[in-house]
Image 1 (cartoon, helix red, strand yellow):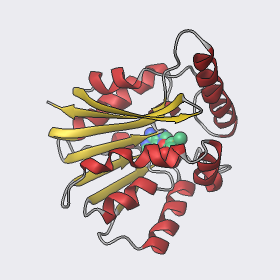
Image 2 (tube, protein in one colour):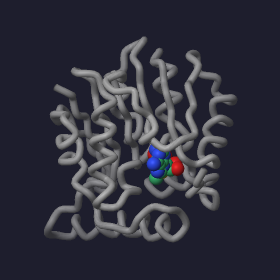
Image 3 (cartoon, protein in one colour):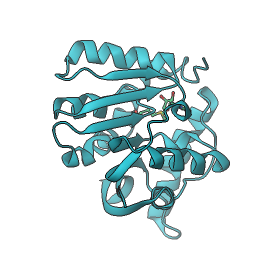
Length: 214
Ligand SMILES: C[S@@+](CC[C@H](N)C(=O)[O-])C[C@H]1O[C@@H](n2cnc3c(N)ncnc32)[C@H](O)[C@@H]1O
């Protein structure tokens, strides 16, 4: 199976935390306040799995999927270390092979949609939408869509292009502008309920978007 993160997967979590001065980990966990004990939660492209372990600690039954064996190995090490109460179902596979239609109370896509090209990202978002129960949630933690004018928009663009330049050279992530994530969540059949921003020096850099399936 393809492992697009074999070279840099080991450092992904720590670098994200340092690069964002702690904002990225906060962004990943922001919408877990909507998780109830017993909920079924799917984490797509789980990486090292910060939010998956936290969701399990909140009493959720978590399924975590990732294509990269390197990422899955890092995630398993964290599970062994943190020993969350509910066993986490770990799947090393392509998200398109998960076909549990309408099974999940929450599907989490943190910094996952941003690895795909323009033609793929819509398909991926729509696929994630199919996995959510009616009334369930779609969570997307991502880079903010840059403001069209002003210095904040420049900072937001630099923040994104610095990250995607590094990851498109070292992984299979595709180089592209920031996608309109709220539109992708809406397009998958979910209505936007809440957006939480994560800022540095008053510049919005990351957002956690909560959509609810009708
Ligand atoms: C940018 S990383 C984000 C990881 C994690 N969600 C985080 O926020 O730290 C994207 C992850 O998606 C995984 N991935 C990429 N394409 C995938 C696919 N088609 N199916 C499942 N996982 C995939 C990668 O292996 C990688 O771990």
